[in-house]
Length: 92
Ligand SMILES: Cc1cc2nc3c(=O)[nH]c(=O)nc-3n(C[C@H](O)[C@H](O)[C@H](O)COP(=O)(O)O)c2cc1C
Image 1: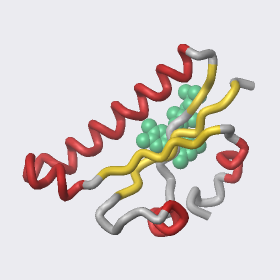
Image 2: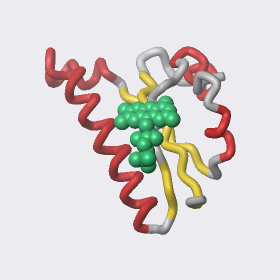
Image 3: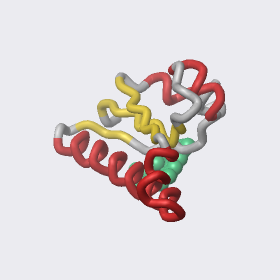
Image 4: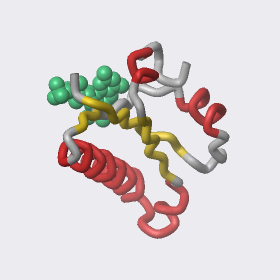
């Protein structure tokens, strides 16, 4: 399982996977790339959560991932690094 046993994630109506191509960022920003990728991923996740909240929905950030399993199930390229899943759904 790509989410390390967190089965509740499968109950969410929508899952958004945030992934990066770190080499692209590194080509432009060099040694700062790792930090920039993390900043961008966090900003993307927060924007999703803010939009979900504005729509009366809920969501959360899931970072405990099995990268290889997620890569396989989404057929991600080797250069694409999965960083987070944001499950979105109705608040309970
Ligand atoms: C980068 C990051 C990764 C996270 N990964 C997980 C995760 O894999 N599983 C999980 O249950 N919570 C994870 N959390 C915590 C949840 O996203 C959330 O912040 C926490 O459940 C508190 O939610 P609440 O403030 O709505 O109570 C992570 C938080 C961050 C910032």
